[in-house]
Image: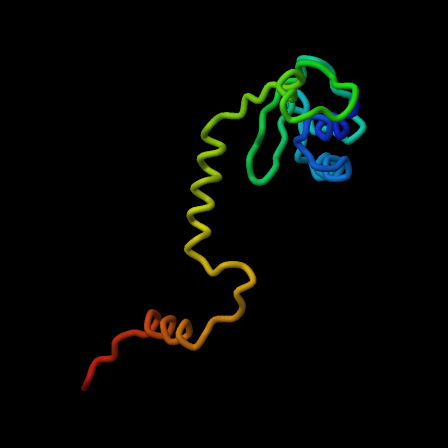
Length: 126
């Protein structure tokens, strides 16, 4: 089975075209080697897959005939991704909350005054 089809069948990618693009960008490795979308997958292969800034590590157990339900994905793939990868993603989420949310727009006058006060150096009276 092709790697792009396997990632789609095991529900790691929503569509096959997303899986194909991930392979073309080099986000998918099989046994340590970058994989093209047409690369075949066999049982006991180790897949490294980067999605949403998390490096998933998967072990292929079996090849499904077609896309499988979410409840039985564990029959076909074993996820051995370390917990540190998910914790790093949580920390990244908290660090993003400090910055302006996307789509809010340009800084307001109050934001501008706050920035000016922050960067203003105290002047000495002579």
